Length: 287
Image (cartoon, rainbow, N blue to C red; front, side, top):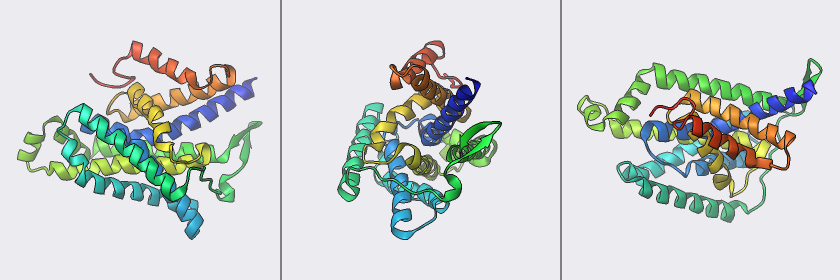
């Protein structure tokens, strides 16, 4: 019984860390830039396809594809930001929602045209496959790797956004663009870098997700719901809140499927409602 509980907690936390990597970029763009980017999942899909194609077509090692997935999604976002997104920063929320959700449809159609509708599996290196036994319990190696990567990303993001001049420039640009520009800050460049950072993290999350949840053209739609739930529960602009929210939702989702299979994936929505009833701004969000 205890072993089963530990396994559920471990698998749930690993799934939560996957949700965190996928959603933390939206926490950055939505929480810090006040921009509603529902195309966030599409950038995750870009990262996933970058990993799949590099491994299949060119034999690039899995670990090397991860930074390339980050860079690929970030570069795509830079182009789109300069052409389209920049024009929407001062637009209303409805314009942002309609354009970005339309971009998800375009991305899904493009992925279907070039890669087909089927799943795109990958073969992990041997050292990431299988499991290891600790204290009589077997833990999946890839899930342990996923947790380690997520913890490293959390530490780097928290330090960058909370303890560096760049993080201070982002907050200043968001709080008052005119004053920031008067002080000599290049607000457009700061927003472009921030947007690329958030989209690149989505691409990294998409690359990491291929092994666990698969990859197909509906990826951007499927995980958009999970990403929005994590951001809402954690609180806008809070890296720590997204981490905590993703962990709780991941554990709740896996535990619900294991303990109450008839509810299936519905439990995660019950958790969302319960948390927001108590904390409308999210676990660590600010009003």
